[in-house]
Length: 154
Image 1 (tube, one colour):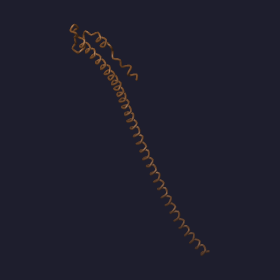
Image 2 (cartoon, rainbow, N blue to C red):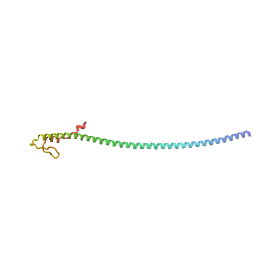
Image 3 (tube, rainbow, N blue to C red):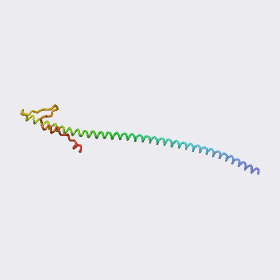
Image 4 (cartoon, rainbow, N blue to C red):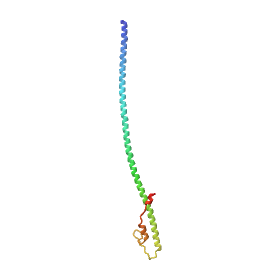
């Protein structure tokens, strides 16, 4: 029995020592596993924080670009409105040029007619700006408004 118990003890002792080593190895592996889990959690937390910061930066850029875009659109609308006003004014001025050119041509023809037919009895008087004072045709033309509304309809 002593020999069997010695063998048993020897084997049990070996098994116990082996169990102790396995338990130490398991504890060491568990400890490493816990460290790795903690490290992974921390790494994941940092990654989430970086991702959130990146998202916040992108949202900030988006807000900035939207604001800048709105300012550009407002400026463009104001510029377009100014352009349309200038175009309308140019159309009016062009119509007035045409009307004044026609008036000038008519007045030149009237003056030429009176000069050609002036026999010395009719005296033609000019005002300082070149208009005839004694001409009834002159009064018809000078009292007429320049009409530009018809041109703006087109």
